[in-house]
Amino acid sequence: MNKNTNKLIKISLLSAIALILRYIEFPIIPIFPWLQMDLSDVPALLGTFGFGPLVGVLIELIKNILIVIIKGTGSGFVGEVANFLVGASLVLPAGLVYHRNKSKKTAILGMFLGGVCIEIAGIIANVYFLLPAYGMHMESADLLKYIVWGLLPFNGIKAIMVSILTYILYKKISVSIFKVEPNFGSSKKNTKTITE
Image (cartoon, rainbow, N blue to C red; front, side):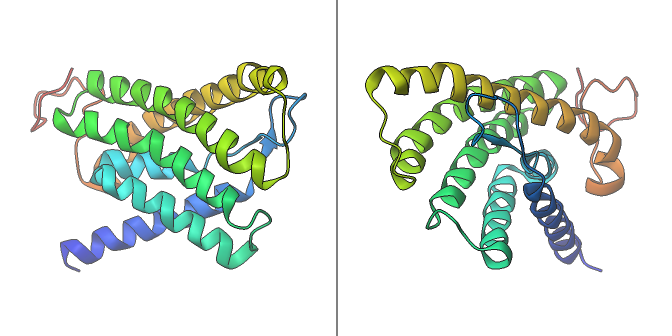
């Protein structure tokens, strides 16, 4: 099996796992029950650290295309577009920072930057796409309440959960799955790249 085929199989596997995780949704903020948490960005972030930021974005895209094909759309594709934009806003900056200089520090910095970007993208996606698509027209005060008490904590919790899970999993599977050293604090002397 050549290198490209092997990589394609792994990207397909991560996309399939992301699709499965997309089905497992649960609310975490009782006053805004439509904000549903899922962990489908974890495989995309794993792919980002393993193969590069564009692969992570590709996994986000494949996941959302597959969910439409299999489950359909209840929002005229608006929910899927928003999910893609928010997911890509997390994985792309994280991957760009990490792949400039692979280390524990850049991994954490990249995920932090991704967390900031997911907050911004989450607000934009909800205010300009999701809320109008669902016919939810909020007054300024209600919109501000929704952003402060709904979107900001929701996307913050999501970014933290996805980042922690990715950090833990990547350290365990990076060598066996991606054939690369994790560079997440390894103390081994024989790693080929610099570690923190």
